[in-house]
Figure 1 (cartoon, one colour):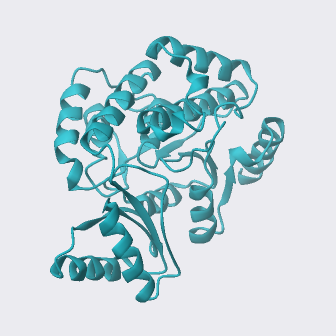
Figure 2 (cartoon, rainbow, N blue to C red):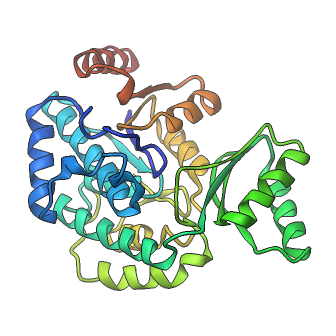
Length: 311
């Protein structure tokens, strides 16, 4: 089985939309997005534009859908689609649960709500080498000492966890995690406290907005963020997309589910690499590929070879 993974915020880099494959499907996707949002999508990946959460989130969804369509033209349609955080919106398009224009409208609203709620002073930090239980104890200790709370935002792997909160609190937590033996602890290039209760009000507003957009039951498997399990109904996917800014993303559970379902080739959409690295480490028997690391023709050849070998 073939699974597509879509990266979340933090995967972006200057010029990433300009590095998408030069294929008709990509050009059509960029034009459709530009028309839907009444802007030139290719202006959203400049260094200055990427300081905006709105530009970053829209750009990542566009890149994901562009690669879905380019691969479909080559005969590759994923059996499973899974996206980390904002990547889930591209996954919903990939599995047929949400139209591309409506995904763009929904993700723009999401990003605007997140940015308005926390325009500065908040973000994320990645901690490697400590378990979720250890992280929870450290966060509780810090809060008991009178510091602002930090929250578990993503569980990407058993010992790779992303924390959310105010920058000062995150900085203190990074020091605490290093002292407790973390292999790595560092802030991420994200300017909002994603996937925690700080965004509860924004998530409720987004759910109201999403209620007016049509969703369909997925035509292939969609892996949810909050539970890391397959979701089978339009309403379940609507709730997952609208609420994922508020709840911890259980990415490792989702990866486990994909493997349990029979995924043997995992492809990460541009511009990501992190999900591929996680899959390499946690599921070494599975073929994991980052599309951003290969020329498109070479990627197509690799997929043909790997999927044929898989049987």
